[in-house]
Length: 447
Image (cartoon, rainbow, N blue to C red; front, top):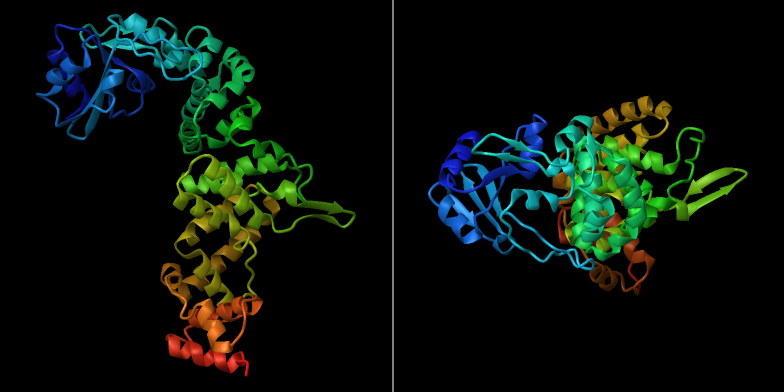
């Protein structure tokens, strides 16, 4: 069912009460975007909303009912109807004292930005726009409703939301809002890491992620969730007079595909360069920055309360992000197989990250890189599927190697296990007995 038809049904169900299209649905519709999910406001209380939508709703959920919101679905369309609210804040917690209201005007005045503070009366077709939201849509401007600092004091997360809307919509931040955010940035410390994470996710998954991160840095907000970004002002080796490390990082974020893990990996892939920087008359280096960077990324993403599996996924991309750009024709098939094994099902994303990294660097490097990547893809296609290679399980473990050779824990264990894995990847051994035989032959057991 089309959203227009659903709105007509709802208008009939609420024919004797107030009902307005509001929020993101109205904003995006005025921008000419395709919108599927409905957002409405009414003077009807939540328990009665449920009764009125029951006849047309496929399912109803009431998880937000204590805040006045009743959600329901009609076919593939999701809708939320919220009772007018006239909330109050205590200036300490971002959670308001919820008070239901009877006026759409009182509901709109409590909203965050002018572009979200409009209402379309479904009964009269009238657009209520008391704060100039439609003009701000035309001007592509994100502006707070009323006093900017007061809106921030009520809920500091609105500072990141402002940046998120800029990056999602391609809008600019109102100068008054910019000043207010700069003044009140420290208030972000009142917000939970989970809520900050969700906004940062949305910024990175937007159409302009680099602009969003740059805004967060320039406004001082990033200092309260990812201060490591402020250290990325270091010139890249051999790229002096081109861009600094922060510009390179933001360009890499812009160039990777719109995948959450890739966007975070791009943002953090060089995060350890400042602490690994060494420079003398012979040049500069960032020894082991990929390994240390994976560790720093793990710390940062843990601090942001990202899921463990996601943290490990991003850290792996960062740990291996130099291996693909370092590919050369001289690599043996064994080295190519090992790359495929180590990256496994992340191989395609690792290649996407590598290409973005090179594109964001000196353009002189790009043609040779693309030629080598085509050669690498051809060789990998001849070898087989990386996911199949990655599923290989070690035939022996460390304890078995120690028992077999009669040795104590030490670096030789890793040497033996790496050798066994290479033999297995090459297809020269396939069973535990074969593994034991080749270990005895190559590494003499102690008497």
